[in-house]
Image (cartoon, rainbow, N blue to C red):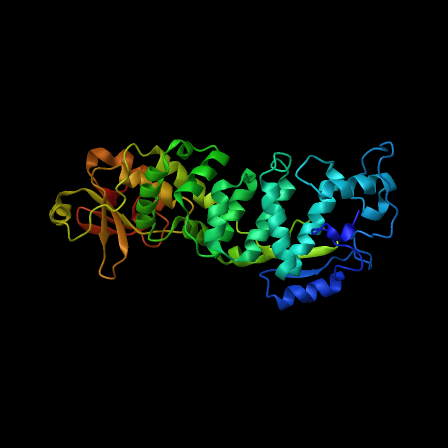
Length: 381
C-alpha cells in the first residue's frame, strides 16, 4: 500500500516536522496559538513511518490500546489501520479513530492546501453514522470551521451538524465572535440539542421572534450572550486535542447560559411576541404618561448585564401597563406602573431590579431612593 497516498496522514519524510508546522501556522496567520507540548521529545505521536513492517491477511491479534502510537502497533494492526484509512467512513476501534483525528488536527494547523484536504475529509466523515456519535470528531470539525473564519459558513454548518449538546454553546460563541447572527435554522437545531420547546416551532415563526427579540435587546441574541461573558469571551484557552504533542489555544466562549433562556422565552409566547412595545411618540403611550400622577408606583429600568434581566423583562411585559419608551438619548426604558392592589406583582419585579444602577422608582409622582423601598415602608404610604 502506498502510505503517502493516504492524504490525511502525516507520513515520515513527507510531512513537515512539528517545529516547522508551527512556523507554517504562523505564516498563514491562523486564528489560534500553537506550540509544542511539554511532553514532546522529538518523536511525533501521530506520524506514520512507512519503513515499519506492515502485514495484511494475518489472523487478527486484537485492537491496539487507545493512545498508542503507530510505531507501537503490531505489523497486522498497522495493516488494518492503513486499510481502514483508505475508507475511514466505516467503524473502527477507538485507537484508530484517535490516531486519525490527531493527524487531521495537525493537517489543519499546516494551513494551505493541506488544511483544505483535511476539511474535505471531515466533510465526508460528517455524513458517516460511525463518526456522528464520536464527540472528539466534532471538536476537530469545529476547529476546522473556526480556522476558516467564515461566520456565515459556520452558521449554515451548525444548522445541519449533529454537534454534541455541550459543544453547541461554544460553537455559537465562536460564531458570535465572527459577527454572524443566529439563524432560525440554528435556533431550531440547538433547541433540539438542548431539549427546549422552541424545537417544535416552525423556522418562519422562529425567524419572526428572533427579529423581535433583537429589537427588545437592542442587539443580536448571540452578541447578547457574548456580552454576558465579558472580556473573557475572547481569551485564548487550551483546546482539548487528540494530538498529544501539540498545544492548540483558541477562544472558547460558551454562550449557552445566556442564550438558553432567550430560546425558552420565545417558545413560551402564545402569540408572536410584540417586543417593541409602545414608544413615547405613540399617542396612547403619551396619554398613559399623563395618568402617571394617578398611579401609585412606577418602576423604570434599562437593559442590564444581570443574569436576571430577561426574567425581569418577561415579568414586566406580562403587565398590561408595560411600556417601552425612548429617553432623550434614544435609550430604551422599560416602564411598569402598579396600583395599591397590585403590590404583590410589584415586589416580584422589584426583587430583580432594585440593585441595578439604571432602576428608578416613583411613588405618587415622587422619586424614591432604593433604600426607601421595603415592605411597610413609611415612604410607600
